[in-house]
Length: 134
Length: 134
DNA sequence: ATTGACCTTTACGTTAACGTAAGGTACGTT
DNA sequence: AACGTACCTTACGTTAACGTAAAGGTCAAT
Image (cartoon, rainbow over all chains, first blue to last red; front, side, top):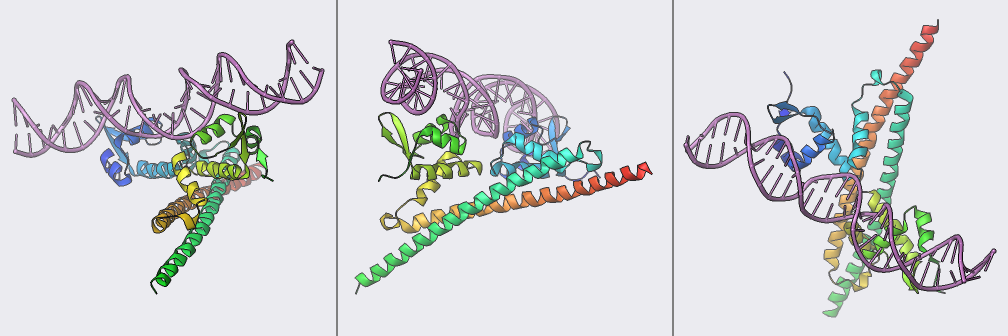
């Protein structure tokens, strides 16, 4: 058994992207579909990678950065020569993600404060409306 | 007193961007410096806005989206006509930010698991090295 | 009065990440 | 045999977000 395979349109539908996008990712080495004649056959691994790419993209990383990070994921630790260096690099990525997360958290909290202000203003208006009817 | 003002290079140094970038943001309406002759004078408000823009950019929003979100911040609730609509829009932004945050959290946790695997492998190698010396 | 620092405008150039059009293949169906 | 569907390659086009070069204004210091 060679595992589940997916056509390009299947993945396009699942992740809501165009074929062009996926082909572009292939040309960047982000996915590596097999071929049956001309047609691309995407493996489960390609599907996982695609999901990672799209997540990274939505977080504002460019494709080159995403490629680097993904390559960390499926690397065989027993085969890595510069283990300390690689580990340091990965820890750096973690820190940069944590920084982004705290930025997001700040933004969320500011928007929530803003939300409360508007809600208060809204309640005030409704009260004034009902008072006007008396 | 008209408050603290900043030159373009001051802000460039503080936020590590080029003058071109700030001028570009002005042309998009993201900052609105006053003028003294030709020169731009940035207010504290511009500085805050600039910080928000850069934060948004690092989170993968484009300048148009950032403009919309920033405009929410400094809007006067007592003057807003479509209060419910605006509120709904803001809540939507909050939800999209929360989604991004959970994506980041996922990514962080996956990278941490990866880190632990590499650390284990590293310990294993060191042990084998010392054994080899016996 | 000229140099240097700081700032300006105008306008063409660049890069990433695809969009899109044109034309072709391969295969099952009508 | 013609058609539809799904896929392919090649290659030019587009958009956002600036980069960069050219030419010039203003003011203080030498």
